[in-house]
Length: 424
Image (cartoon, rainbow, N blue to C red; front, side, top):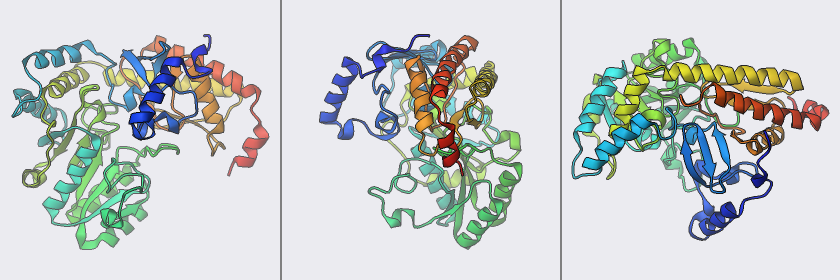
């Protein structure tokens, strides 16, 4: 596969858009999609997408391994989801009150998710997780919340990874523990004492720039035990992983069910929607709190979510993502052995993270993803990636063709002595 010549330098189209954006947008872009955080050469702007493919504004095509940072679970422009969205749009989207799609979606969510007795809807993962914390505090009449060090639960002041504009008071009632460390969890619970309102946990450890880590069964069970003993709410953050690992929730295979759960990303295959699910213990608290937004009851995303969840239930979408993830992981492992590169793959296969051991500044990782980008594959050097059910064997093979070329090229100039010095 020939490299994309358009990415030796920024294309004219890309450069012009960046210049325009810089004049009217602080820094030209914000948040997690700001490619200034990635090695130079990544396109910032895209023109269209279909299935698992993206086209940038210069027309270069990529196999997309980010799926919009997670929302695309069935593929861009899934025909069943878009037909449902279009049919609802023809009737109405945002109205003075919700459409019947609200009730239909809530019924479907409660039917699909074993721990859920009720559901509320919002727009973003930050909305959902903030609502979970608010409901937990209302239901327990307590303040303290346990959060794993390094875990991401959104961009509100109480949980944002940035300290810019954040006050100490915003985080006054957050107590930290180490993920998968039961002793650390118990110490944090003891510190919170009788003021413990909630224990928050991500579906698996998916902090950026470090290997991903599945929860141990003992850790998950300890969370449930502590919450049962103290009366605190167990809050599962399934915003990132929900509907990719298990249709009923990412911790369902562990047999550990949360009291409250936050969802977003894949719930509506790219249409803006988030959800909070909970059990009957917190139903009254959910009714008491005031959480709302002008766009939270828009009907089109809800119709899209109904179609998305039904298709996930009716097809082998999750199994497909898992099978394609295994195909990718096994292919990359073989390539790394062939070229003697210290590749390290972690996390669920359908949400892979690819890094290199002994590469603390990501110099090798950056070279790898840029080589793949020039061969038409969009990877990320330090954030977990996402597969959709639109990724098929031919797409994964195209990815592996690009990564083989990337590994071959970087292996030629790879200085293993420097790697040895950098290794702990």
